[in-house]
Length: 607
Image 1 (tube, one colour):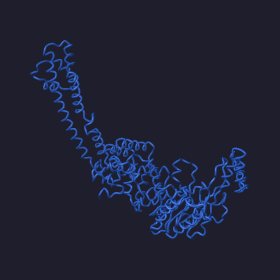
Image 2 (tube, one colour; image 1 turned 45 degrees about the vertical axis):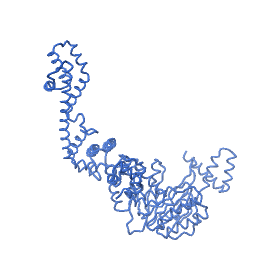
Image 3 (tube, rainbow, N blue to C red; image 1 turned 180 degrees about the vertical axis):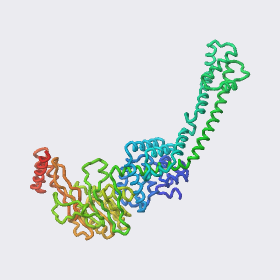
Image 4 (cartoon, one colour; image 1 turned 30 degrees about the vertical axis):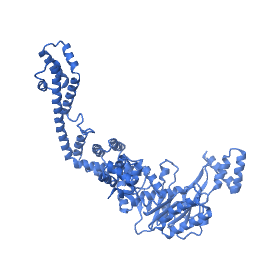
């Protein structure tokens, strides 16, 4: 395959990659999803990531049919990257894409959940050992030595199940010998000090001779100042100084001494030059012998080293994803069988964006579309609370594929859409999902549209261009559309939204449409239903109390009286309060007063 055939590789990028990596190495880096290689070659990291997502998971990226779906996908990756144990693992997470093959989804889930189980079984000390090993691996840029030492640390921690079994099968003795051999080389490929005693001795001797040679005149003056005058005495004193300060042998000294020196300067200089030459040759010879022995060790352990490098890198990815799943108490989703009716359902699902903020007030939600498999034992009882006037409200969502979600402002409708989007994306990426249980049908197109507060013809047209074609193109589609009416006038919005609901039903899509125009959408197709979220009053602190669990087959209502009640109670002066009381009359003065009384009662109960 030619470089320019990869998505995002134009003439300029192609030239950069060829110049820095070479054609074959660049293609190999793209095929293995190596963000760092492309970044080191000069590509911006974000661009390298986008190229690799398309190269390794192009069909999966096509599932993300809207910019909001793409944004939700990137948000999930950002959350997962926070739990990466190495930079390389973080890069690999960033290029994960939705999968289009169910067997691949199941296989990745198997690996991630096995890694999660193995990681959860380790005690705190062993976890720390593993993380420290990967920290050193990162500091050394994932070198062979770092990989081998990380593999030994994993063996020491005793991890031997799931993805860790790749390390458990390695030969410890061969790895230990390879680790020692690799540690013997410095970053320039030379033998490190401490790797061989004889080489260290020769190097020390050479260094001492070089220092003495650099100060030869001072040495001569020192010898003469000690009272040395005749040639024999000078020679003996010089010989003693060499033996005591350079670790050379008497034979090496006498071999290097010149026979025809003209004077003391010539004698000392000639001797030191001879020693330097002899010691340099000895150092080189000894280093060659040591390198040969080390390379023989590494050749014998080459298979174990290669397996360790591969295993440590692969474990880092699955361990990172396992830590992500463990952090959010995620579980394995069940994929609807190929012959099943399409469905998306969650039991006690949590929004990861909110969970990442450690918001303890997050309320898990149960919801379902299509043949979801939620039964009465898992359902939320919709009875009670403000607005539960519909005695026919269901405890279990019906099997309709399309729902219109209505209800209070700040009631969590958008959050529910985001949660469903997150669950489907994670499941299709082969990752556990933040729910007690979930059933997911993989889709060909995920249409996620957040509320955009822009009101003009251009926004309406661009929105329709992004959300309608996936429905018309065939394939399985999930529609998650938030307050479509925000981009056009209510009358037209109701007509268009009714058309979108109808089109979704006709095309066999799954979908949730959030709107405040439910009454204007009647009659809906029989295959669609209306669900509602209700506010229940104000807390003693005058915060809006909302039951975020949708009540199925019942229309939710906005609750402006609660907001007006809070404004009346918090008015800073009499004039301001009078204005808000006028609004209270408009929405129902009795309701406002009852809300305030209830809030005060709740406060007294709390006290």
